[in-house]
Image 1 (cartoon, helix red, strand yellow):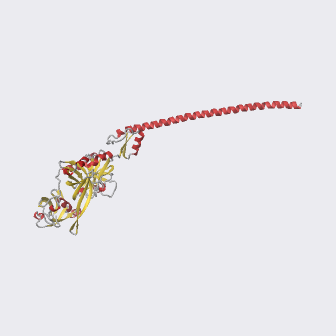
Image 2: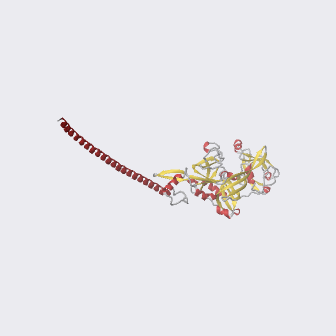
Length: 462
């Protein structure tokens, strides 16, 4: 009985265990299915979001490309006022055009109606057009110095620049600064093709620091004539501050070079000696002119060269003499609108040719300079003080005496012995000239004109 009961108990015990195992297996299978289903759902969701993200990136890239294309397409309209630069490839794609614009150096940017307008510094076409109109000017001169009453001469050479501004029946006419050709014993001009030809002074205006020199057409070869051109003069009154400008000149005498910048200021008032600004209230008796100020580099040798606008028009004549050398980034140019009437007047003057040394005429005086400082302190006119007159010479016969001050010769202003010698170098012995002198009187100096017939063979006299 005991065993049977045990057996029955065992039989009834094992059946629930099997059922529990079956239920456990069913639950395990159901859990695996859920995991698989969950993995599939996650994969589907990842694919959907990845697709959406990729599509968003593609759309944004397309929009950005379209925006760049639109800006590049609008660029010719933005720069319609700038001279067209040839040689660009019309098939250049948008990316290359954008890179080119980004790499270009900018002179200035203006924002209008949400559009950015940019002017680049590529001036190659302007320079190519104008370079044949600019020349180098070389001046060989003799400088006279006085030491204990004795005069000593020394030879020197200086370089400057000039601008071809016109032509008449026999001459090519070049504008430059007066200080570039001042006291010249010999002037030569070098053209863009490298040829060098002698030039003569046609006329000068010392107060405005302007001069016109002439080269005989008969001295210029046909090849050189074909390589040069006459400059186009612009309107400096139309300039605005910030406008791009280009300077071309014979910097440091090394040959033509190009610098760029902008108009820094207009109507800058500076005294004629270049050392004082009228706004400081000093040197009020000095000649005061107004100039274009620019940050384009203007170095020694650039004087007389061209300051150009972006169209290649001459809007100023550069002068390194103005403003001194104590600061950087400040160059000056004579406004072409002010210079043009003076240049046109000088172009009509008769070209003067210097005579040979053995044929030169002389007054028959010795003299010293009445410089500006002495003129102000002693109330004397600025010019050449006659310290002695040689008997029997033209000066003595014309009535010049010690103490007279020579201020002009044939209408040209004389402020120094050097200027007097330079003017006399154009006249041969036997020529009669008109001197303007200031003679002392109880009421002060009185102006007087006298006719003097020049003599020759001087000894320590002019």
